[in-house]
Image (cartoon, rainbow over all chains, first blue to last red; front, top):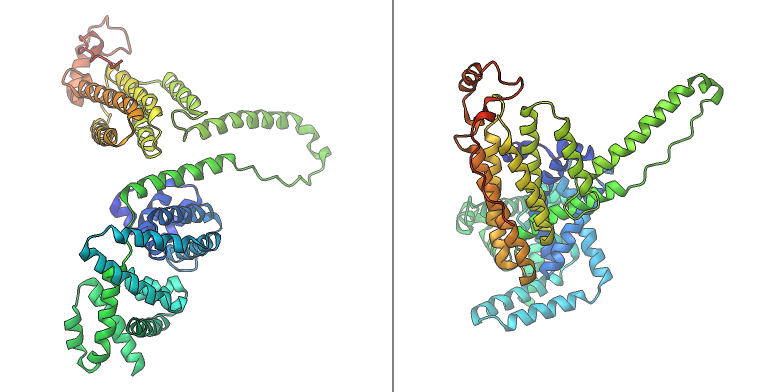
Length: 184
Length: 297
């Protein structure tokens, strides 16, 4: 399967092939979505190694369960997103102190940076802190639509909402973030 | 008003993200909403520049898919077969067919052998079933009835060895590289020893193999600089093996090898064979073989 050919094949066809044991189909699905899923996990986890472990686990679990996957007319990324979301939630549930460890690592890294980088990192940290104070669904839409730059249609599939609802949510989330940033 | 604003905010964000518009051009195009749009779009751009997550490392992407694939394969192999529902057919009906049942049992026993063979297909040097995999390749070569088939098998096996090298590198199993590369070497040696390659043999496959080998040599040289000192001798040996394999490929591609004769040319040569030539033996056997390259120890 050439690169051009693989780009043209729909998720439904690839999933069907993967269900019949076609290793190449798994490879194409992986290549198609690894960047998106990793970036989503990375947006939620500060540590690169943790993000890599969780991402690998998302694909392994999803491919293992591909036999029972039911097509609902959505992109496969919407399904991978659900698995990734659950993986991240489980990760934080299992290691409740990991957030503080990761923040500590973040701060340690900051202390080694040069001045310009410190300013940027401080800005990032304060923006992140403002985001942390938002309700989860606001944080999620900002991650998906603003940080990862997913289209409105794809964000709607991932979050299981209509495109109209996504637009409303984005507007409210950005307004709330603006308020939080100003309060700080 | 609110719905309209939400639509414009969404469209502006999309256009800025795709580079079709800038913040200024958006505000200019929607001047009625500019005051409300500006802080939200600026905040979105600022958040993206500070908090946008990185893409995965290429090494991680390569290694992860191999690990996932190997895990899936190994789980598939160890998965227990589902218990079949007991037949509702009464035994007396089958009595006259005992001979058939015995035959089916024999086929099933043979089938378990094929199961092992199939399971061994994904094994790597150092794995328990790797010996079975290599033995099955030897059997295929023995059972092959034509040199055309021999050549196709040898190129396929050489490709398999290179794929094993790739997986071993990703898994950082440097000690097992030697086995895969010596297998590659011996596959290529056998290929160079063939008297003639068939007229319908695809010459591109040798070139592809050569390209692949060149790529692997580059990777091995990069790996050599990164691995701990204890793993370096194995990589060094693998590089020597690969270099030797490259020389053998050049030998296969050299003008002396009958495979490089155009189909018509080969036919003419065959027509010129002396009547006393034994049947089934190509003229290439009379030719002096190109000098073999020395194998690395």
